[in-house]
Image 1 (cartoon, rainbow, N blue to C red):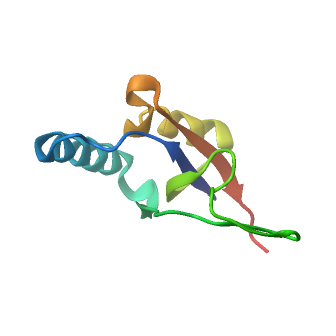
Image 2: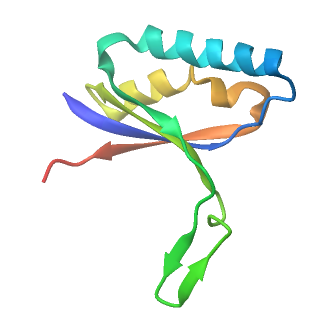
Length: 104
């Protein structure tokens, strides 16, 4: 079974602690629904810096990373079906990039 990186982009910061609890509950329920295919639930990430041959930028690039997870699936299509349930998609403020983690 292949491993896939889910790279989360966007999303919104909850406005209240209660809203934050609801968001965390949604993430917990989604991750639990993935079951043993969830290899690493990952974490949200903080401010990123973009390193290029020309130097370092503080902007995180054109679509900054907001978090990641690692899942196992039979195919990229199966991984996409898992990603479609991700809470970052709620409200249309975020996206999930799905890429196979290649064994070397």
